[in-house]
Length: 411
Ligand code: ZN
Image (cartoon, rainbow, N blue to C red; front, side):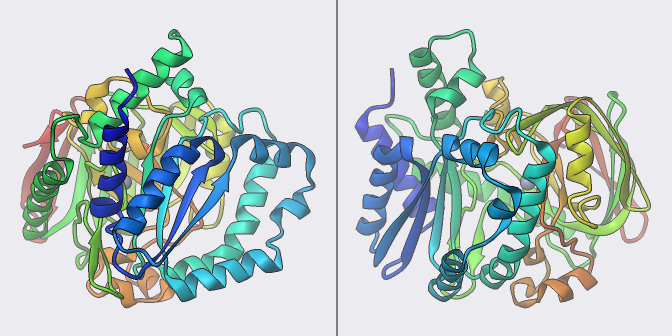
């Protein structure tokens, strides 16, 4: 059965009240696909009920993107028009609460010219970056998802479209802890408290590096930034002191490691869906903090492209701990969407780090944060390394060691 309207409202309410935590008088921007107008409007109404001053919806469409990349010139697609830049300026002024409702077909861009895609993305990202930096840490945002028929069929190819939609709805609602007869706001508070306790424990260990090993070939060491904190679900908007949960679901306790300080090989345990295309059975080897080689059974070219998106795309921006008992992992299938798949097990990200993990990090410029070891790049791509037998050892300042993960879960 598809979720009832009451359950959908409950989910929309959770996203607005607990996720984005929309405050009285705020401007909200919702990004959603045109196919999802009914749910987007439910979220919109919840925003107004929470006291939003104005709610705007930016509609997208997989097919529109595909047609543009098929027929329009690269220069045209890569150009940010005056009105688009004005919109970015307006965003910096309004500091809107931003809610992204994902439902993309994982294959939306399959078969398109990879080079063209990455050049256009790079060109557009360059213009967007200063605006993105200007709102970083100074607004609330949330990424959540609902099924589309194409996405559901991708996850459950052997089922009818209707069955696939029901299965994906069930899985999504399970991962975001929404049940017909529960109070999801309360469930989330418990969940956040658990992760916050883990983050506190990690911060008290004063770790200087982490050593990963598992039987699939992962053998990897990464240095941490001494001042950097481990963080869990909650984030803070410093302009209004409002906490919010940027990702729903979220299962990770994470930090940004020292850019340029890691050695060894990480073997991915799940395929990676990037720019609508799949990279499968891959590993990345690092030397002197930089990815120097990679191997993929499928998507080799794409993986290489990713690691060369800019000068620092070959360095790490995140290490995250996720126990294998995570509800996403329990669902037992690949979502083909990072929001879910990154919450299945331990992962790292190549590309940009998070300056918010530094003391007073929100107030640092990108350059200042970079000097302290936070990687800066136009990409941030997570990939899963949490094998069932993953062992993570923490090495403290005084050289002593402590087990953090044994057999893919917290000790
Ligand atoms: Zn992460």
